[in-house]
Image (tube, rainbow, N blue to C red):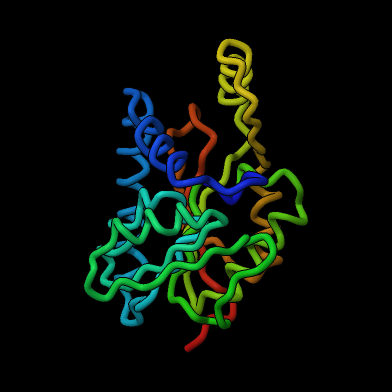
Length: 222
């Protein structure tokens, strides 16, 4: 997601990133598994009488999950540091009822009112936030703008995945570094932001560090 970097993606960079990001067999497998998990979590969100009528995807990236979020029946608003990412997300949504996206750095605040969304969605972002104050600021902002639900992901401490990342950096000379957290540490951060954990689903238990979490706002709006 471009909001994890210091400079926003340009339109050519967005197109290049989208084309190559999930082309490999392993990444296609990851995408398929992520989609299944998120479908399950979203079914839980919309199963109650108070279905969200608006969903915030922040940072939205190129809108990889925009169509999936739209299947909830809610309007989807994408927000990202990169105008090109916001624009691309918009093109992936139906023209009828399409909401305008917002260019914003979520770490510095979002241009929305409190309780403006029934669901806040932030996937594949928190592992880019290495400082507790950054994670706390983002969690607090998500809690502010959602009236009830949030779906997020983070990377839990995992020795095998950590070794895989180290080998990848060595062999491919990748400079990307991710932050893995003890589950209780991140749960405490989520609680301090005003959320309770409803459900946690690992991407690949014991192999991959990514965890998907369904959160409920502790003082949800009625």
